[in-house]
Image (tube, rainbow, N blue to C red):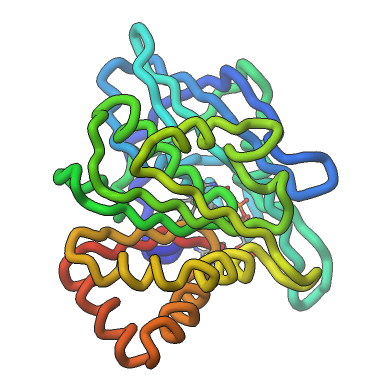
Length: 286
Ligand SMILES: Cc1cc2nc3c(=O)[nH]c(=O)nc-3n(C[C@H](O)[C@H](O)[C@H](O)COP(=O)(O)OP(=O)(O)OC[C@H]3O[C@@H](n4cnc5c(N)ncnc54)[C@H](O)[C@@H]3O)c2cc1C
């Protein structure tokens, strides 16, 4: 599922107030901010990994009245009379292929520039392909880059802190260009490492090797280094696979699994079964 798979329903909106915003990557790399929003609406209902929409007020380029983009709920906690949501937002910039000029992504810059006390208009929460299986002996194979970590963090909080007693293997493969881009696993915020004490959890972090490599290349390397375990997991009837982050990560997994399987056909038939049995979910975006 990617940006273009979503048909935004923006008919119902909820107002949220920014209660905190802080940068969670260092100054010499892409800016990612952890933003907490409070919704004074006790009935606001959400599930881990769901997405909310952000409506940026216009006017916008090409006569668009509003600009709507999705962000995954990284965490949510009920507060008296409302709920507090956490988002993880990368400040995006794009190069216009024709003019060569750089321009700022509308919604991500709007959110990253928002100050404490500002009001943000939300839609949703929206359906998500990501669901935690009901059976606690299921294995969760989570593969991601960048802000794709958000739904995984929400999952881990749910299974280890609220639900407790998860018995299946939980494996997080995460690729980044630099150590500081290991979101929730860096010097600025290391709360995912708290779960390393859990017997069932293992995090496999990999950094890019070459200067031209990106996060997906780094993730591919991490999968290749552990191909035997991943291959065994994907063939297990109890495994659910989740991909979140850059679109390219599906290719990185394909390449590593084709090698592990010995042929593209063999891997594709395993993948096909995962898809048919609804044990394969993707939430990738640009
Ligand atoms: C389900 C979902 C969850 C997401 N969760 C997060 C998250 O947790 N954190 C996060 O930082 N980002 C997340 N994203 C990405 C986010 O929604 C925005 O796409 C991103 O922040 C850029 O938006 P923008 O308004 O800043 O840029 P824009 O101003 O929209 O510019 C985006 C660039 O992409 C192109 N583009 C615009 N719309 C589309 C489209 N529909 N399909 C393909 N190309 C398009 C534009 O031409 C431009 O080059 C998520 C996306 C989806 C679909």
